[in-house]
Length: 353
Image 1: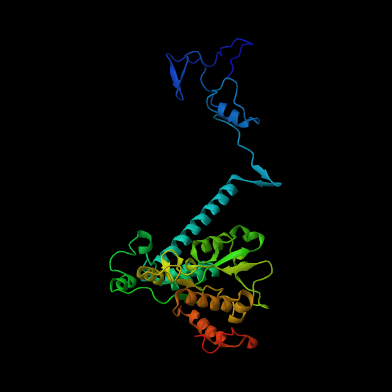
Image 2 (image 1 turned 45 degrees about the vertical axis):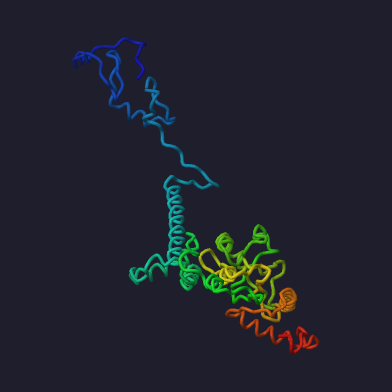
């Protein structure tokens, strides 16, 4: 507070003058000189009335005690208060926590880490009704998968008892018939060769199978569905999209880490002595009908050539290993290959098999 220097102070006759305090006095943590006047009771009220928000002359510069309240920020002509900003932040945090909860729940269901019988059914129903329909469908799909093979992560898969292939090799068995594997429904990996703008960064990456599928699905679910679905009129890929089956044994060995398809069979054949020169995987786009497989990809023609090449190299018949829907395709192929080319078949004749 500024000291008055314009006129000397006048002592009132009616009221006695207060005695000055002796010695140094600490005022709010700072040492005050004896000659400095004490704070007036109305000083705080006067500071609040200041429109500029600046402190009064002589006030401490180290701490702004009576600063005026900040004006609310404006965004697009609308005033956003601090309460609304805090509410928006709280909603974002809630969404993040829910997303983390959903991920943990999906993983727990897949790993069978939580016994579902220990959770009350009423609570399960409330959680299920609170989740979106597509998420419930995904949870049921995960629940239908076989239990995760955790030995694939810790390296214990080949420890312990020997595989059937190792036992056969110990008994003196050696590779003889070349093997052609025809996988089942949804067992072949599918990769992207051409797509829309939203999926071009997934070029030659799995849209079906392996963790790359999960990354593509959760990155943009609508984009993933656009690339996976077929044209309802033609039964083929829509215009501008080209999804093809992954080739090689890696397309049929593991669906995702810990969930094998043909991986154990290939492992046992390798223990006997087979290698890529004697094992062939006839992968296919399982979304297509047999007629479309031959029309678009020449699948049965290529399968016929693969079998004939293996027979020519090894000099013995080929063993066809099929599973699930692959068995239906093999039966279709055996009828097709003996049908004449004039009738739309492979032209192998009745003695091809």
